[in-house]
Image (tube, rainbow, N blue to C red; front, side, top):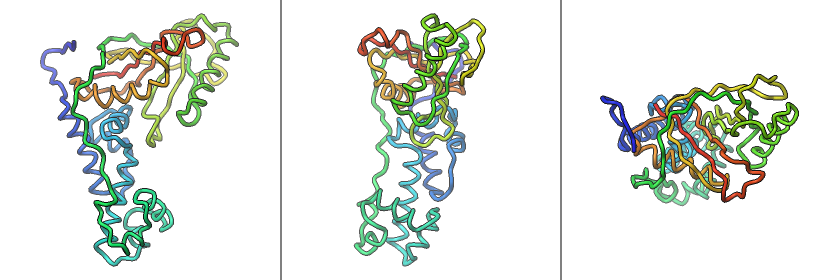
Length: 293
């Protein structure tokens, strides 16, 4: 059950859809422009830490994929309605070379720009827009909690969010704990998300951490992060860590738009409640938390 302060107006699912649609209009109005995620987050009035996850979960594709599709839709329109050379269409569509444009066009449409023009193909045959924003309900059991500030000793993930990179990051963190004599003595392990690890968020950062209150030397790649306390939406995932991405997608794309809340400028969290070394995968407990205004 959600408890609200008097006078606080909930943000509806319709509000979420309208914010996302403003972004799509901005991309559509200037498909050749180099839009940034920070700029689009401002248009949507969402925290830049969480905007792209909300967008990707609700729209069904990343901002980069939407921008590419709209840019190529405009190029297809020029090919169909003008006699402009393909090179000129490529430049007008924001591509630096006709080779890059042709490759992107073929990847989306399965035909080259010249084939598209020569065969008189229709735009509707090639470009499929994002799926409608989901309006259905969600049966996720989400609790609104107040979390205390957290001091975490963390390792920054290197590279993309692939299983081998996660494993390497947590292995380095575990080795640091062994070197400092605190292995097995810390509180819960924690994952800290700044931004979205998928879909081209260049500002994305993920930290693997442990909670430890006694002073230590932050060496060997360790960074000490102070995670502010405050209100969070918390969902308890029971099962393999492989289910974390899908659970977060549902939180951002289904639960959050219906919740009446919007996220603020604190990172999202994974809090690992038991030890994967001595716990079967199906019994692992992970609390996934989105910070709320």
